[in-house]
Amino acid sequence: MIHYTCDRCKREIDPAIELHYVVQLEVKPVRDDSFAEFDDEVDHLTELNEYLETNQPSVVCEDSGEAHRDNYDLCGECYQQFKRNPLGRESGFALGFSNN
Figure 1: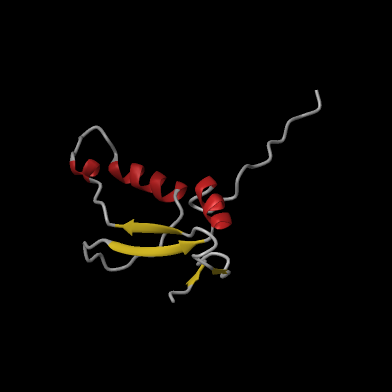
Figure 2: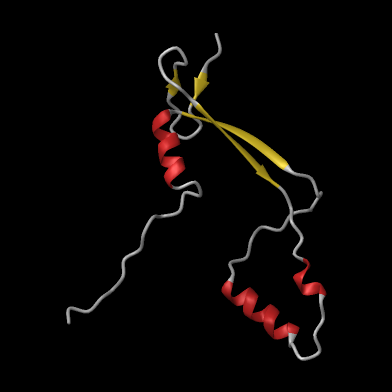
């Protein structure tokens, strides 16, 4: 008999009793060629500096140009949570309004 375990909560899933879900994730490199066009009136170093200041640095690794695929098993409860927030970001942020 095949045993399934939820990759999120680590709970064992019994396929005879409940459904389980498979999330297939594919990540592949994409080159942005929008910087390939040169315009004499645009200061590219300033644009690059602004981009680097506003974006968080990421881990740089060798680009093999190949896609990477993973499969994850989820129980029903974790699937519902994944469906609502697939990237796992904190949902919502507090806005500070005055009492006027």
